[in-house]
Image (cartoon, rainbow, N blue to C red; front, side, top):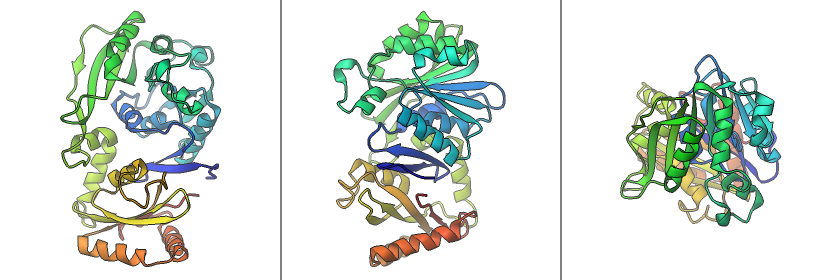
Length: 359
């Protein structure tokens, strides 16, 4: 898969889902993945549509949970192109379709009451909070599309008794409820997301039913980080759904140990490599991209995970980390190329090595 300048491939679910992103556009984040897992999906029959689809992250996550056709609608051509290439990269080209256009015209192209499920991660911020970067501003700020518009569009697209799910800011929840109720989208499920147990919620997941009976079920809140700054088990299950359960079952197998110690390699934006050790490499990867994990990667992001290998003990992992750090840049590239070739197809399940190079 060819990447354009300033693009990278980000990985979730231990590289089972790959999403193309750019440093010039608004990236997918926890809210999109959580919504993709929170929303009720049509498993084998029906159709789903994702509005304000961005680079396709919500549709891609839902495609892992369902076999039905999913359509994404995105106004920015560049993001729509990335979404299409991500679908192809994940082998979902036949299941996913992305339309580039204004969501306010979606019913003209797609029909009214044509979908069983509608999802949307809408612009959160009002115009006065607008980000200066145009592509980011369109993705994050309302501009010409308000939540009233989004609720009306969702109600037009979804079937009677169909479901529409959103992720939004808790401080604007009353606006969401009012907008939904005006178009007969009845809130039925609600879940708050807190960065830490001691912090206020910074996002809320809401699912509605068109023509549903009154009554909202409030699910237990999701807390993202524990006191030590690590992802909570609850968040990982909400974020990864059955993928996390599958990984936990795999970890309990004869070739794996739940106390794995990992050596990982990153490729930085400037083309340099960083090698590190972690018990939670995917949480560590996010911190590297936030600029809080290591001095070396600060300012060199975004970084891309290109190699991951598990060891049964910390001592073995640290020895491998030290060995790789002694290699020259050319030797590190050779190491990655060799492991990539050996992993092709089988993903090297017995040696506990996972190497994925940008292609």
